[in-house]
Image (cartoon, rainbow, N blue to C red; front, side, top):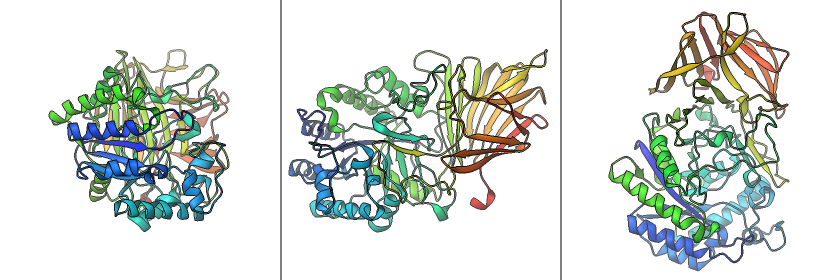
Length: 528
């Protein structure tokens, strides 16, 4: 695969019931003009109501298909539902209703999902003469993804980034960036082995800020509020503080594709037409100029979504480990953040000034099924997630910023947060490591596909401490080498190959080193 890949993906709706006065055709016309002006490979994904409108399909049919790729945007609309002989349950006057139980495949039974997909795919073939090679939606359940792959040989899919509460779509604890092969049981979890994977790469959309997005809306006093939506810091040009800000966009393109981006860097650029051209035009034009400069320097490659999916499948039989990291904050603050993801877990190594800690760990498990694999979503909100080991966002509160913190023993015997200066941060092969110069000597965090190692020169004068202030923590007990959790009714464990675990009385889990090392395990050999 190419090292640094950008997919320009615009998804297209014909109606916006919240703002019916908007001209939704103009953004598509302008986006097509941009693709032709810059000769940028661009993917357009059509919602069914746009697919049955000859204005939209005619515009795209006229284009050079070496430049313009046309695929499917799989939100569900009234014409598609009624053609399937089903009852439309959207709100009055909403032929597209964005609520989860109406506007997405999960609002319908698995059998109904297949009927809806068949109708869409056959209509697409009637219009364009072939089935769509790529599909997208804010989320697509595992049953539907497997059906699209097995019946229609779809080559790539894209879904929303991690977010909490935005539009009622909750996706949390997934593969942070790039692509993965989803589990047959949970579309947000990479399969741990080839026997349980759906062979369609799923790419995370919207160019999520790897430093600031995670904590947006966090309050260490009031904690995580499940009723509040996170703010947004992404490449979407409609947001003036991020994707509409040339300083932020330049920073994102630099950091997202730095030397840590291994084995490849990935970002999606683009915007749905539902915002109208006046709100997205300036930001998108600015982004195209910055992309053109990066491409001219040889730093980026543009591909269609399906092309990236094909190349991914050619190179990787199972989900590879990836890193995306920020070493310099665009605001000038001394913050750093690296996301390391494997098919077994994800982890975020994070620093603010002299403080560094693990902000997030989520476990991926083939047997943790998504809520909607066989069941129908009946609520406006939807939830896709994985198994939390450390959740610095949802477990904070009551004055505690949750995380897994290195702690050093003081002269009085108490433990205090370790202070450190970054020495080195690197990606080597499948592994990532970060080393800090601390009062206890050199402290290294090393992430490998199945485990994380913490190593300190001061053999036994330190621990790792996980504390939480909210009632969200699923930790039940800890005994020597094992910490037991239960989340969403599912039981799982954290294992320490080196070190030992102790659950304290004050909402704290302590991890003690063994000969100066702690090793936390997340994968079993038989899953390879």
